[in-house]
Length: 472
Image (tube, rainbow, N blue to C red):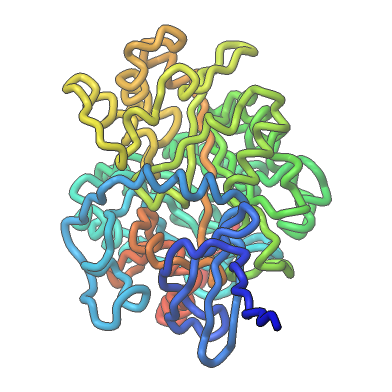
């Protein structure tokens, strides 16, 4: 008689690591497993009150795993605003548990908006409008935390409808903040001549929502057809000498087929210095979605490579080391007429930004590494003097690239793909390395993903006294 023993079953996934996350329903902090399955990265977690949740973190496990070698040691802020009591993510402000300073600080000057977008992480609507006194104190706090504050971005709501937004831009520049940006839908730039004149004088970099060219795209994401306003705003900015960065929110099945066209348009338009793609964050307001079927960074990279037909390749995009490297990738390209030369084609960026391999760089190469670290950072702003000087240093031995700062300012195009976590994908190891923060009036600097997903936005909005704002 043959006795057959039970056979063990192999898991259909690789258990990659254990991290911490939050319950999408009640927001309590819970354990989360990171699994590699069918070539993808999955987060699986269980809340004792609401059960199991699964969410797609990355559509390409190899890209996710390889990105981790770009994890640069953090640079600590000069001061912290909160103490460690219950730990991440409930003590944000920054607390001493945080592993990176703030490259880019957002100040949401209002909660009001002149649109009612179906997709809006800020959940814009009636609420508050900051005073100049509040913004003045917040800018001082940013400088106090950073010493040399790099980038402040005024956001909302819709910041251009705040009656003092241009004075805020001027104030930030007067305080010595290196780069000042406005995050806008562009409607007022397109329609208001007087505002355009003031914008020209204040001269911020404009972070322009630009989701694609199809009317269907605009109606799903923004609630109405807006392409004419976007194109007019860009043409008016070009005439006024104002730099713009296109910011497409990419939703699977809506506009992911337009990423190549957006890049090609941006390269040709005289006002546009780069594109910052943002796969949609399912926090605030959003359309119905399946957490396991969403756009991730590798999808956008592949879309750009396929749709630009070789202009850009997947290996042109390099993870950004200042934040957690699985959160952001970037590339730069020199544009000479119809010829496009991505920097990673002529300079092996891996030689300098791989922090895991045991290699020692010669002294001259340390300058190149420092330049590349500045370029592959959330504080890099295309078209600026600082970025041009860093490009000049990084490409000093690259014959295919120009050596003059003027050429590097005018002819280099930047592409960024930034993934922000929502309650389904929140990973505390990423959050603790976040270098994009929301500065609030009480002096706290709250990491962007925590602000939108953990409950801080609701707390801050409730605490601010409503101050009426008149829409122009």
